[in-house]
Every structure is written in structure tokens, then in C-alpha cells.
Amino acid sequence: MIRSMTGYGKAEAILENGKLTVEIRSVNAKNADISIKTSFLPKDKEMGIRKKLADELQRGTIDLFMNWEANAAENAKTINSQLAIEYFRQIKELSQALGVTNLEMKEPNQLIATILRMPDVIDAKRQDVITEENWPLVEKAIDDAIKMINDYREKEGVALYNDVTSRVKNILDLYDEVESFEHERVSAVRERILKNAEDLKIKLDQERFEQEMIFYLEKLDINEEKVRLRQHCKYFMDTIDGEPCPGKKLGFIIQEMGREINTTGSKANHASIQKCVVRMKDELEKIREQSMNIL
Image 1 (cartoon, rainbow, N blue to C red):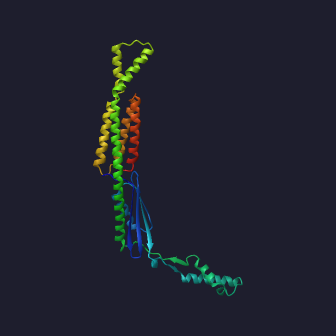
Image 2: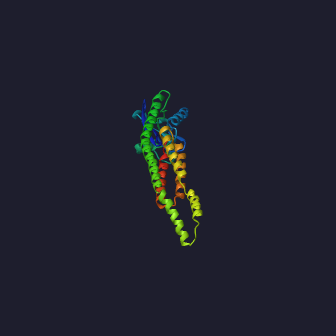
Image 3: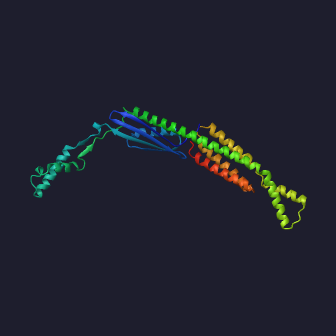
């Protein structure tokens, strides 16, 4: 069964210092366009993860995100006491130079709050979220997110399959309808030519007229287009049923289907056939739009 290129997967890894959430999103694209949007993943692991995403998801615009929620104790910030004391010493020297005395006794809470806002006085604990020891847990979370996105893609693929195959059937049904107008079209063309000749008071040689009529109708014959379109539709169904990732090939088949439908329209010479052609084009355009999302 075919798969969509659109999908979403999410998994969590409970590590010693907090929780790491992995999210993977994908949308349709011609090739595998992989973007790792996180600073937590170690550089030495990035190439391996890119290869894993390419192998498992194959095609699409694929984004990987990581979100880290540290435990309360690990999330606490620390005060750089030495730097805070140095800031206080410099402020005290400045106040003395300006003639302000007993600075530490005047609104000490306000002074402390000011010092705490100085650059680098308060530092968040910096740590490597992902280490060699917890890497197996992180990798499992990535694998789980990939599995989830593939499951999502398979469900979307069922809907895509039902939609495009029903539209292929509609095109075949419409071409059957075109065939029902074939005899009427030939008669209408013949009558129109005879009427124009009569209006222009042209005397026709019956034998020559029949010969020319045959040549003219051969130019309007759509039997070849009919045969080729049905072959293309069969090839479309064989491909979508028989290949795991048929998206690109289906695009080429759709181009060929469109060529036969357009040629039928140019040869139609009949209002009802033209209406069928317009409806076939509409169905084919919807198939084209949907097939762009097929893996």
C-alpha cells in the first residue's frame, strides 16, 4: 500500500536529569530534504541520524526537533559569588569617589538586586543533555518517532489511494461516455459539410466527396488516443498497486494521460465530447495534486 509524505511523530526519552521530547514532521518534496533543528544532538551523531531518517522516510521535507525539560534541581541557576563581590567592590569605590558613604547600609536589598542583574552574575547550569551513557534511550525515542510518522503516513496513504484510484475510474467511465457520442459525431460532421456546400451552392461529386470525407474523419479519429489512455490508466493502477514508492513514476504516467485527453479534446468536434474532456481534465488535475504527496 502506498504512503503519504505528510506525517508527524513524537516520542519521549526519560533521562537522568530530565525529559527529552523528539518530534519529527514531514511534508511532500521531490527528494529527501532533512533538517535537524536542535542544538542538543551531538555533532558526531548527526550524520547517523540523517542517514536513518533518509533510509526510513525516503522522501519529503523532514524536520527533526528536540525539546529538553530539566528536573527542578538541575534547572536551578547558580550565583557567581566572586563576580558579585567584585561588582560590589567596584560600586563601593565609585560611590566613595562620588561622595556617597555607607552604601551597603542604604537600601541593601535594592543594591543586591542590582548586582544580581549584572552580566554573568547568575548562570544557568550548563550540561550536555545527550551523553554516550544515555544515547541508547535517545536513539530509541528517535526510532519510536520515526515509527509513529510511518504509521501516520500509511493511514494517509489509504485515503490517497482511494481518492486517486476512484478518479482514474471516473476518467475511464467518461471515455466510455465519449464513445457513445462517436456515431452521432460522424453524422453531425457529415451533415454540417453537406449543409455548408448546399448554402454555397457547390455541386459535389458524390464519389470524390465520400473519399474526402473518409480522409477528414480519419484526422478526427480518436481510437488511438482511446487505446493509449486506457493503457496509461492500467499502467497507473499496476504501478500504484505494485510498487512501494510509486510517487515519481505516477507523475510521469499522469503527463501521458493528460496528453491523450488533450488530443481527444482537440479532435472532438462535438459539444458533448468536449464536456466529457473538460471533466476528465478536472479529474486528472485532482489526481496530479494528490500524487504529489505520494511517496
